[in-house]
Length: 231
Image (tube, rainbow, N blue to C red; front, side):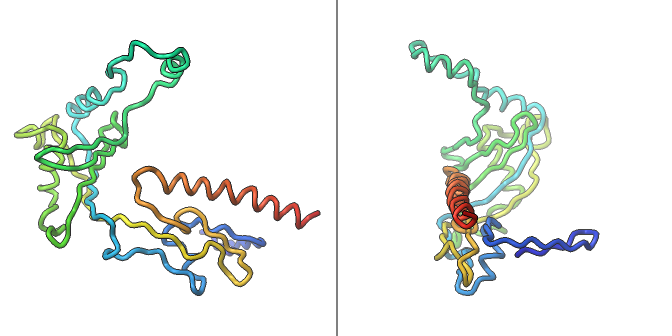
């Protein structure tokens, strides 16, 4: 069962035959079960280290970036089928979300959260022990990296309408883990789903897609068990 206490001290208890533990990579339900491994990765297990830079662009740069990634400015294809033409005309894509930069100045990925408001995240590869977060990724150095990645240089990078504002700089590491068992508890009545069962790197959307597939698979299986029990 699950027992909660609300802000007004009212206690609520929910009793069920099965609990679906979809409470994330740091799952409390999974961690409380004897023999269930924690899935919380250590930094030594990292597949890749990255620096997450959250930043905003100033008004003029925001407008410039909107022009650069406007899907409507892409070249049109002359010869396409009627089906494809219908799809293109009725499903106009929005701005791309991921922008990969590979040049002599920087290698990084820009993640566009809101191109109209100028809200972005930049993911920069990080190579410890050859680099340190404290020395190699100060706000000033990250500011320069972002400007080079966006193609903004010189005085424009600092304080002008073509500049950027760093909101936060944080290190993180990419890992993949799978719980040794998805059915937990003495009666196997706790079922792991989503990140509680398996974690993936963010690229490719595998975490979201496998989480949805978990829910789909569990829905019809639990429905079968419920109806068999009540027949």
